[in-house]
Each structure stands twice: as C-alpha cells, then as structure tokens.
Amino acid sequence: MAPLSLLLPLAELEVGKHLYWKIGGLVIHGQVFISSWVVIGALLALVVAGTRKLERDPRGVQNLLEFLWAYVRDLAREQIGEKAYRDWLPFIGTLFLFIFVSNWGGALVPWKLIHLPSGELGAPTADINTTIALALLVSLAYFYAGLSRKGFRYFEYYVEPTPIMLPFKIVEDFTKPLSLSFRLFGNILADELVVAVLAFLVPLIVPLPAMFLGLFTSAIQALIFATLAAYYIGEAVHEEAH
Amino acid sequence: MDSITSAASVVAAGLAVGLGAIGPGIGQGTAAGGAVEGIARQPEAEGKIRGTLLLSLAFMEALTIYGLVVALVLLFANPFAG
Image (cartoon, rainbow over all chains, first blue to last red; front, side, top):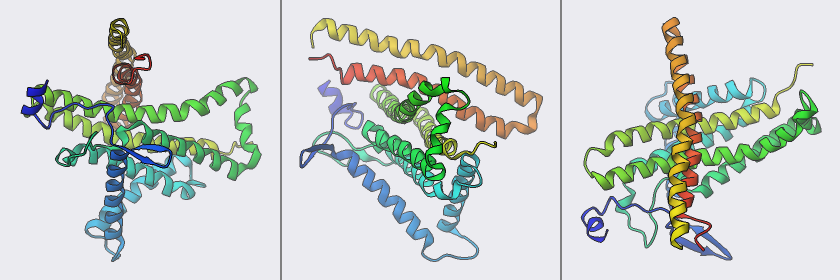
C-alpha cells in the first residue's frame, strides 16, 4: 500500500494507533486529550464571547447561546420534569454541547494537517475511553439524583411494580452505560471509517454525501445521548403519585 | 496471529455486521412505514412525527453499530491474536 498512501496522504486508514503519553503509571491516549482540549477551549471561548456584554436584545453570539440554552432547557424539562430539571440543566447542557462540538469538530476541522508522531487527531468521542467516561458520569448522576431527592426510598424503584423486576432493574444499571457508550463510540467511529474508506477508494467528491450523512448522524447522536441522560435522571427523580 | 484465527475473525466480523443489519433493517422499515401512514393521516403533525422517527431510527441503528463494534474489535483489537 506504500505507493497509494504516498499518492493520497490524506486518505490513510488508521484504527487502533494512538499517541501514547505516560503519566506516572498511567498510559493515556494523547491525541484524544489534545482534541478534547481544543473542543473545551472552543466552547469556553464561545461562551465567554457570548456573555461578556449582555444586551437586552440579544445579537450575534449571545443570540446563538440563548437559542442553545432554550433548546437544552426544553429537552431537560421534557425528560426530567418541571420540578427537578433546573438542577440538572447544566449537566445535560454540558454533555450535549461537548458531544455535539466534539462530533462536528472531528468531522469539520482538518486535523490531518497537524502531524503527530503516531496516531491521528479526530473526534474525542471516536475513542471508547471518552464515551465510557461520559456514560459512567451519567450513571453516577442518576444515582446521585435519585438518592439525594428520595433518600433510600430511591430503591423502591427497583421493586416497582413487582419485586420480580428486581434482577432486570439491576442488570439495567449495567446495560445503561454500556449501550450509551457503545452507541456513541460506534456511530462516530463508523462515520469516520465510512468517510475514510470512501476517500481511500475515490478521493474526490464521492465521499461528500457520506460526510453530510455523518454530520447529520453525529448531531442526532449528541441529541440522543443528552436525551437519554436526561431520561435516566428523570426516571430516578420521578415521584409515583400514591 | 495464526491463519485459522485470522480467517475465523474475518468471517465473524462480516457475519456480525451482516446479521446485525437484518433486524434493525426490518425495524426501521416498519417505523418509517408507520410514520408515513401517520403523516398521510394527519399532515399537520409532520414535524413532531419526523422528530420522533429520527430519534427512534437512531436507536435502531445503534443495534447494527454494536455489531460493527464487535467486527472492529475482531479486526483491529483481536483478543485471540496471541
């Protein structure tokens, strides 16, 4: 494949190669950290720029931020309910924005121009470690939400409506983070792979429709992750009307 | 990796995606059919139906993606490579 990859330097296919950093006894994937920092920096810059001079009639960046805020608020209110959604709005909003900007940043920013010693930059969410961390955060969040709102009465949820449900509800606690993380990771990696394979076969124009489809599905995946996180939290804080 | 392991892994990777695509394919077809029926019956609800349809399509697509993850693990991070 050597002559082909020389011919098409931007269309190489790399899976499972990473830029390893050793910190203490830990080995971490450096490229994921770099691209996450870029995403976090971009989001911070956007928010700071949009909230520096607040105006009564929002214009420009402030307008965009208010639109985003209203969007995330509606999402959280619909899933968590009127009573508790305010506590969880920052969490849901952060998840949605981070995943959304990660997915789109991985597809839209020309990372290939930055050369790394090994591995390649891309969407942070195309690495299983990122998505598992996010999914475990969601797990912690809904346990905390349930326990802090209802105390030990939270565990009544496991035996409702009948105690027969107990094993299923316990298994559900493990399958929730599993499916959340694999869904996001698989979708983003699949988008990148489809584009990479198409670009490898036909480097011009042909990958474009696949790229647009990728942008669409990655936006939907961010929405789904945030919706499901909100739904799980809403399930945990939901009070049965006795 | 010996040749029998790699051959089995490649076949299994193909089967994982191929078989995993059947169920969600049928499910997505049913869901899309239902949505079209709903829009035909009640065209003013199109926006709401479309949003719900896209969300549920993505859920079904996740099932195939699980198959794809298994296939990718077999191809690029094979635990039996030795």
